[in-house]
Amino acid sequence: MTYPQEPAPQQPQVPEQPTGYVPPQQAHAEYGTTYGAPPPTGQYAYVPQQPPQAAPKTAMTVLFDFTFAEYSPRTLLSMTYILGLVALVVGFLVSVIAGFAGTPLAGVVALVAGAPMTAFLIFGLRMLLEFLASSTEVNQKKLRG
Image 1: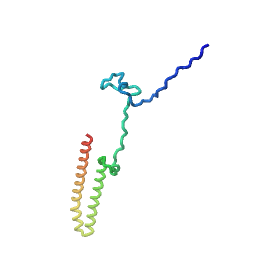
Image 2: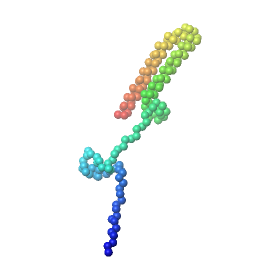
Image 3: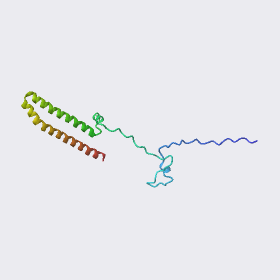
Image 4: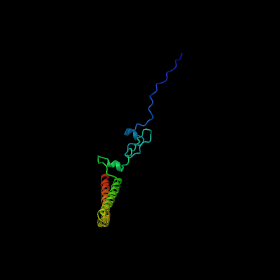
């Protein structure tokens, strides 16, 4: 009488997922252990992932960044320039209106002397902001290497 044979015990199956790490002696076994050998292309090869991209810095995020870890972007400078232009033009118009409210001569003096003075201040504001932008870019390039 013959008895049925029991099936041989099977070894547990290894999952088919890459682990991300291959020991160096196994990773280059088929290529040798020389420096600069191409990486393995098997299922357990390490595939580096790119770090997540940071959200772009906007003027408002930099404006409320209390760590001062990042330099302000050009949008913050453009906002400052727009606010400066509005302030200078409003100041010029207020001085002209106040001058004409007092005497006509004071209004004409405010108009004639105020227009070149306002243009000069706008030019100075632009030069100051350009200087700040260029020095910031130089410092950023120096820090990044």
